[in-house]
Amino acid sequence: MIRRQLFNLLRQETRLSSTSTGLRGQHPITKDKPVLHQYPKIDPMTLVGNQLEEMVGEIHQELENQLKNDIELGKVSKYYFDGQGKAIRPAIAMTIGHAFNAHCGVAENSDIIAKQRKVAIVAEMIHTASLYHDDVLDRAETRRGKVAVNRQWDACKSTLAGDYILAVASKIMAQIRHEEVLIVLSQVLADLVRGEFQQLQNKADSSERFQLYLAKTFNKTASLLAYSAKANGLLSSSYLKSPEEVKANADAAYNYGRSIGIAFQLVDDLLDFEASSEQLGKPAAADLKLGLATAPVLFATTKFPELEDMIARRFNKPGDVEKAFEFVLQSDGLDRTRELAREHCDSALSAIEPLTDSKYKWALASLTDYCLNRLK
Ligand code: FPP
Ligand code: MG
Image 1 (cartoon, rainbow, N blue to C red):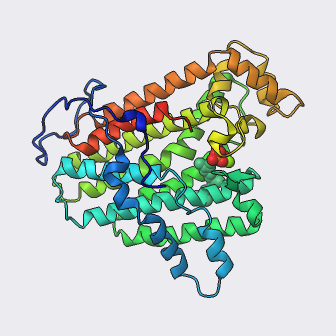
Image 2: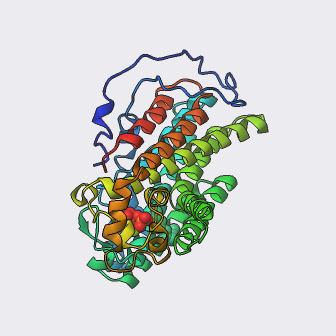
Image 3: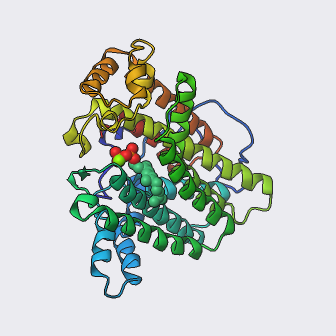
């Protein structure tokens, strides 16, 4: 549930490490500062959960508003908006928005917050629409422990329902009435499709293969977080006079979203090897079964070069999936993947370091711990 606490393990409070004036322009984001690892641990859901509580109902309403007698389209398009998702994307978008509002001196009753909430809703809708298409492409059996949409209905209806969700999301995007926000959110749609295409490609050279994997990871996962964070950073900066300051805020928000997005996907790829299918709500080793070589496998090729041939044939020979799984467990692939995720979490912390201190900034920082320690 949306109100569910994201991470019980982050209960213990540490002390605030610095004080803040909270005044606009007091801390322009201009230069890198060292990564801060000491900060109060705050669950973003305790801060923005109540603002997201109504989100699922509102999305249902928006989807229904366009429909007359299209009862089935309504049912299919609402199917994955069931309150069972982690709502991590809207939570990050809202928390970023509040953190930059505190940094820019935006009033708590400003109409900017309503616009930032629309960005959060659009982020959740784009993500969910992409899952409708993804489950068709992957011929998924289950998602979040329930029958996948393409099994409950069929590929055509699922694809069209995904298109319909995007159409309704586009209308909400336009209602934000901010040209650059519209441009950056539209970029996410292009990136998602490019990422899915990149996933179909293969490279013979191992370093090019890793570059392609990182590009795919950005496009499929991090782009949505990066650009929805940027959109809300831009909205927070609406009343700033200095274009340099606006750009610095937009860049910092983008860099946070990009880095935490890549870290999230790296951990996801790790959990495909470490977590059980019950924990994941979908089969374990799903990526290998789909022919995909993610970071743990790519790293494992150093110790087990025989993986190269299996990657090239997309693990399609009987026994490939089981062998590749074993090789990964016997290699340092999982440790190196976790280390890379940690580095991206450090980049995320660096991006928000120059922000005025606020509970929202600490919640963004705490998300890096959740990202690295989560079990599903
Ligand atoms: C999950 O991948 C899928 C995505 C993050 C994006 C999928 C994007 C498309 C299908 C392109 C079309 C885009 C739109 C906007 C309609 P996964 O299979 O790795 O994860 P999973 O285990 O959750 O299925
Ligand atoms: Mg999938």
